[in-house]
Image 1: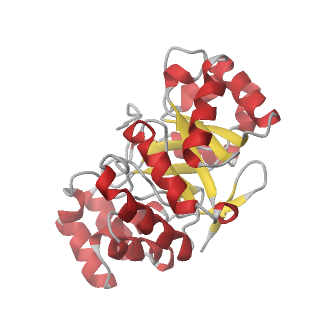
Image 2: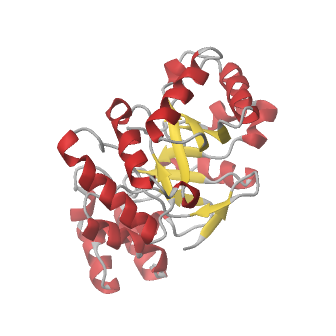
Length: 276
C-alpha cells in the first residue's frame, strides 16, 4: 500500500476505509464490522469515523472491528462543531474514546466549522494532544480562508477532509494547491460520489472497460492520481471492499484522464466549498 506523510512525520496509507452510514441498523453491525476487519487484512488500516455517524453507532462498529487489532489501525474520528469548545471538546473526545474502545484517537478532526472560534478549538485540541488522548488534530470541510485563520497553528493541522470526486472538483482551484504548498495532505470523502449517478456516467464506463476494472475503481483511482491526497471510500460488502483495496495499483493513462476531464471539467474559477 502506498503511504503519505503527515506534518508530524507519521506515514499512513493513501487509501483507507470510511464509515458514514454504518451503525444505523443494529442488525447490520456484525456484518459491517466483518467488512472493516477484512479491510485491515488487505492493508486498509486507516479507518475514518465520526461522532455524528449514527450518533456514535459507527464508532461502536469500528470498536468491534478493531478489537484485538488496535495497534494495526490509524484511527480518525471527528467532533461536532457544537462540541468544539474549550469545555465540550474534552467531553466529546472521552465519549468517542469509550465508544471506540481505545484510549487514543490517532487523528481528531473538527467536522465542520460552527459558532466556536477556531482559536478556541485549536486550544482544546492542543490540550488533548498534551494529555495523550489524541495523536494529532485536523479539520474537515474548511476552505482556504478558514485555514488561513488558523494562523501559526496551521503548521500543526494534519489534514483537511473535504468532499472530492469527479463531480465535486472545486477544491482543485485553490484548496489542493494551497494544501500542497503547506505539505498538508487532503483527505477525500465520498470519492465515488453519492447515489450511483457518477458510476453510471458513459465516460467512466468507457475508461473502466479500457482498464478492465469497475467504474467505482476508476473514480477512486482518479482521486489518488496526484500526490497529497488520501481517499476514504466506504465499502458496503466484502466484494466492494476487495475492489477498493486493489485501487492503489491502478494507473490511469493520459488518455483516461483526458476522457474524464472532458466529461467532468476542472474548475476555472473559485467555487464555494461543497460538502455533504
